[in-house]
Image 1 (cartoon, helix red, strand yellow):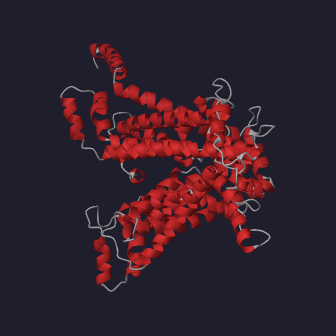
Image 2 (cartoon, rainbow, N blue to C red):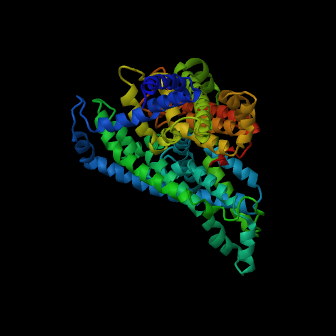
Image 3 (cartoon, rainbow, N blue to C red):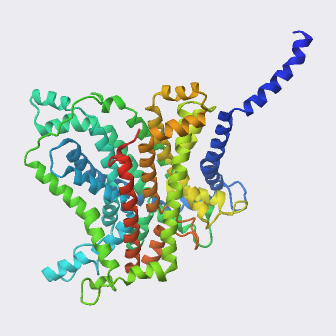
Length: 575
């Protein structure tokens, strides 16, 4: 090589480096990776790190020995696994028949049934638990009082403070996930396949059992896995029902590590088996749902007609009405009645009705009013941040305008594998103390919610971006528009319905979220879900009911307004 070539080589390298730094895609990649490392990688790595170290920072397996060598802790893990299995069976019994009825049958009032499932999704599970405590508590529960009044028995037959009572309440507010996955799969099954089975002599129920349901089976099993993982990681309903019932679960045991003296390292070690189980189960679910050809054999263009099931449609309608009654109508009715009562146990007795509880939460109890405002503020902020980050990440990775798009997407979707209560422990370890010192602040709650629910926005946005023809974007680029112009002026307007749907989903789940918030809130950042536990311990069910009714009303209004833009089937838009 000549001396002239050698002398010009460093200059060429120096020219390329500033050019790389001037590339907007490079800076977009840098910002996205930095945010995702702070939101996702840092808490998870800190959780693993703390599990292998003492409070003084020394390498040790003592935390594992203390957390997993205790028989009470091991029993809590086994109880959680049993609860997850029980809830999964119940949700399958609730969700699959409803999905079949709405998607494939000629049952009357299918639209109303679909709305009842949406209402169950909107209903926070901790409020559902409170409602069922008021309905089926062993002593003062209204259903037991009615049975005693009509039969003269010494005590009622219902006791919500039991293992199956706990599983029943959790199932009532998680079955919408089974319904959504099953209905989405059934909507892709062409009637032509069922007609072919009928031509070969199969009856209607044989066709359902041997053709329709098997085509949806991967989606049903995938949803069942998610339900199982949700049940073992749930904290709100177990805190309200399992603790009084004396049932020790993994999530309630995790909370005990945060009582004085604080044992963050043991909490991290105890959470590792749950985290590993979640990762394995999600890998299995991913493999099942990857079998796309098994679900949509006929493609999306096939004809779909409701199946005439004769008089069985009335039985299905009665079953749908029963589920709506148990999950929505009765719980909301008891909450409204308790919120209008001076003493909820007296019911409709003369002089017991009052609006004082609503006056109290708006004008007297500043803690309750602040919790409602915090919940709505944090939920809206989280939904906006998640949608903004989601569309940016999806566009950058799907159009491959950043280096290493698979790395960015992996980081964005990683929180799916981390249960909320375990993620909260990681965030506490990473950001509660110096140098960030965010414990008890609203910022940490929004960070936690954003980390937990970012995968919803990324998944929805990625599926929508894949459906866009790149030629639309290329036309803007030819006319001189940059990537930012394409994103703001073309992509976002075209994906408005998808983004609004993602906003609604994230807003709703944030208002219901307790597992992530329980370790992170302080006196000034308390949300409704956390305050519910405090008020229930005080026995202040009247104020609690009023607070819950206001929250459900506000969330319902937001969902109704969003559905006018996104459509009523926004829950079904998934990749």
